[in-house]
Image (cartoon, rainbow, N blue to C red; front, top):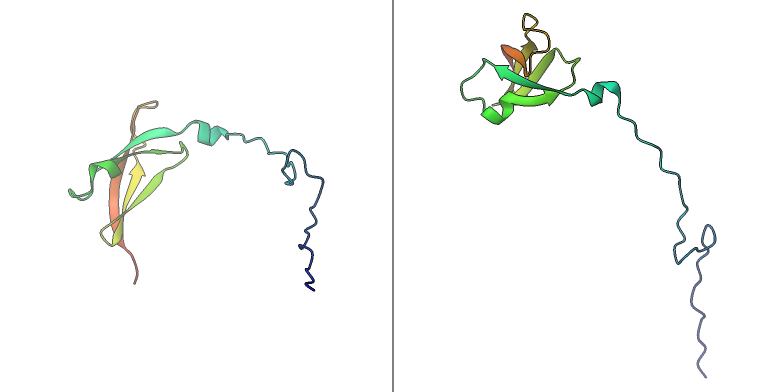
Length: 103
């Protein structure tokens, strides 16, 4: 005579609806902040001649005044050109120096 155990049962957290027992969670509405909505194009000028062109143009928040770019074991630092014409696109950031990454 063979005795068989019944299949194990699992309880779900709630009723199964259309074959799906996950809870329907409300998805919070995403809002784009004013800062993110106004991303600006910038160009990095100066610095090492071997800094790739694709690193010299980017998009940043309009409140950024300094940018650092990782390059050959260090960082190239750029600061916003405040003497530029207001509303000038793209905004220019000039190279101000280099720092090494500490090991």
